[in-house]
Amino acid sequence: MRRETKLLHYGRPTLPGPANPPIVRASTILHESIDSYEGTKERRETDDSVLSYGRRGTTTAHALMSAVNDLEGGDGCCLFPTGVAAIATTLQAFLKSGDHLLVTETVFHATKTVCKQFLEPNGVTIDMIPWDATDLSSWIRPETKAVFVESPGSDTLEVMDLPAVAESAHVNNVLVIADNTYGSGWLYRPLGLGCDVSIIAGTKYLSGHADVMMGAATACGDAATSLRNAVLAAGQTLAPDDAYLTLRALRTLHLRMERHQENALQVLRWFEQQDCVLGVLCPVLPNHPGHESWSRDASGTNGLLSVVFRDEFDQRTFLDSLTLFAVGSSWGGFESLIKTFVLREDVLARYKKKQNSAIRLHIGLEHIDDVLEDLEQAMSTAKRD
Image (cartoon, rainbow, N blue to C red):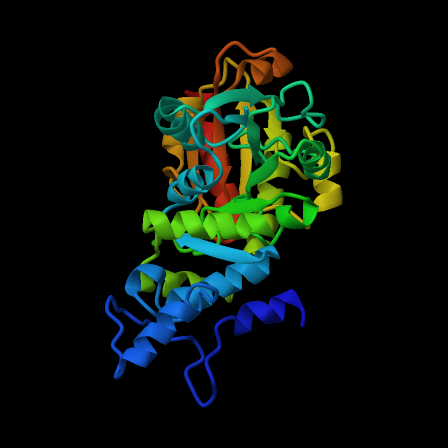
């Protein structure tokens, strides 16, 4: 069955029945006999679809777990109330005091916060490595247990050669954990490229409507067992209403991604024609860092792109003059968003730029003519002022 068709049928209950699995809200699950109660507790140790207690998820969450697991191509999936919760719990599953972790410099800022405020105070040593590293041997120590990567990277969207990273890590018995929020399991599948764990902030494209907070971590082989044990011990779970909304949104994931990409490519071309722009950052561009890896391993792009303006351009007036784009964090919903971010020193050097601010856009599902018209009027205002 093709992936587009699978999306429409994930979680389908036995017929006759509803098209979508119902929301099951429950903490206590009742039994009519002690044999049933004890049998359920035994079966749930090897089968996450068993309805046993609300903390382990209800049938609504179980359907979503199965869907994301299939989407990512894993051996087990766990759900979380946020993407950061998925990151923190996954790292906790594989690291202890005295261990060493490698983290690529381009990861999400909240991932760095987890490392600084949680892992390091609890005895885990951390080294940052370049996004374009492929041979990890010079950074790996005897106590190195994992490498955490994000590809494309946060804000500046550099693409890593994940198969090469995974090969280098596994030769040294090091686990590879990938933040796959950009690819969302649809454009990009890190587990198929050799990674052991793939994490998605489902707050973004999986839910797609700017109204759900959730995260998912999917793993292969022994890593799936370790991850599951840590999640159960930490009591991490996802509310059934959020699981329902995310599963419902998955039905249109492929259509939404197509429209996000179509709109983003037109906006990208518009920015490339502006004389105030030094560069546009997007994996589809031939000169983008890691473009060859993206062309080989991924199946398109999403609605994200970043823009580096010339120092003399009035970036703040441009942002404040937009009417269709709202200023806000997150992305992956139906709406167009824009925000500023701070460029790393190496990116500043690449563009010979002094001011370290750039903008990141998420291009939504609006009619592209309205999007471009809003950009045109904001650009005219910024240049006039």
